[in-house]
Image (tube, rainbow, N blue to C red; front, side, top):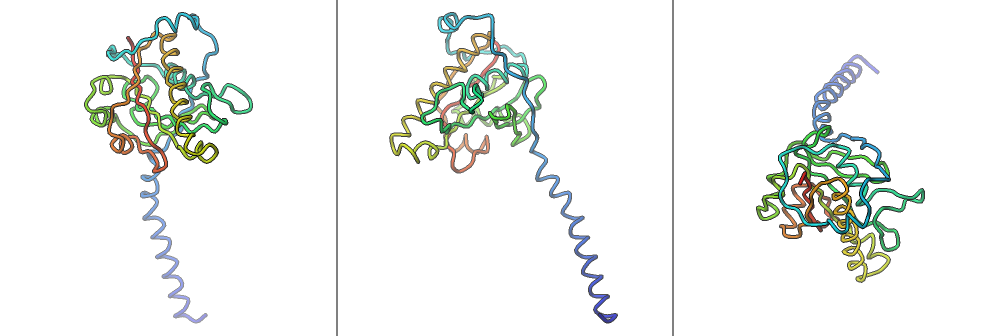
Length: 231
């Protein structure tokens, strides 16, 4: 390699290094949304019997202006889709144990949890942050302006990847997915009663707007929105 070739080679190395340095901040920004929040372990006992929770279960749309705790959010998520068996089975029944549901948390007033949007990961019992900031007003707009969505300290959003179930059961699998969403939503209702919280299941919303707000993948379809707060 002559002097000219060495000089050209060194210039290339310098340019490459400068390029790497210049994109480091961009890479940091791209990953700045991602953060994993380990949830408190769920409780497996409580002071309220299953009969009492059934008796007291109601749809509650008005909440006190008080924060929830991270432990309360943890318990609601576990009731809906938490792991309850070493084989990976969950709290809500699923046709063929295929588990098409995904759960998102829109947090706006939770002690121990920054405002933002998070995805629940059942096998790790943790939250993966997908967006920063309080997005409750945006979600309220997507839900046709229902005040309970704006005022709740936390909202749980259900989505489904239908193909996980229809790949085995065909078109009938769509019905099974909807049944599973109902099971999981009722579990949240009953757990909320045990925690002296109020929740409501909402089905009136603009699908595409909800998908945009919570940053769902193209494969997911929104099924249900459940605001939760102190009653």
